[in-house]
Length: 321
Figure (cartoon, rainbow, N blue to C red):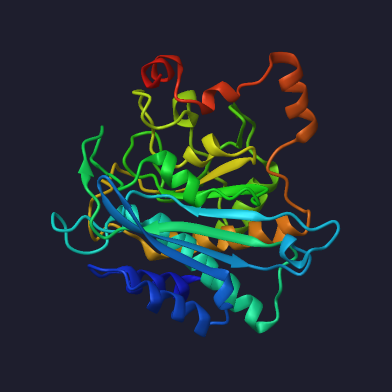
């Protein structure tokens, strides 16, 4: 079960200022070691935000310094901000990514404390800004972020991550028409690959329903700031890593602005958390593949590298120079 963890994290974040020492103490009280909690306040041109990274060591993970360690799963809570103060009071819909990521970390920490130790390590990263700007976007407004996407990726994407689940509110669109959560096809080095069968199996086990996959386009896997339309930032970690990335989208039947308050659904977030926890278990044990390595190598051999899609683009590069 994960509803309790979601409610505790949401309640903690629902305030005008994030108390980082209190958040660290909260996780330590649940069993996390102090050295596995990292946080800092980062100032950007558009404001400041609190960056958080939590490590949950596995039995055979890289942190155990085994000769052949189990793989590390990264879980990134993607968002612009958890609040839009002073324009909106309270948690905004965009906070779902951070809430779900931290609730997943809390669930894994409690499991470890009780003796259910994972095989591989897990790294959870997100940022917490209660005063993010509202930005125009079609069909509904989004939340901006105090840092650039490149800066966010540098803070949240860790080289130790062998695969990444990127959790993000993805309600401001007309292409996903189901409330709950949906997953994306796997993205790796500029290629949009087939949807992982293992992830589909886990999803239908967790939800008790047919799995839901949301569509992504080439634009969505290119970096922000290149002037093309993006569904949202859910696939942006894929522009900063060689690891396979899968989006976990919190969804609704209608388009909901990221800056809307009172629009978060705790039960849906808890379902997404349970999905992430099950993926963590299977991935560390070698029972969940995000993509087919042989087929990916064949694609590259046939059509070449697509990693240029991870760059800002020709005209942007020339402009920088």
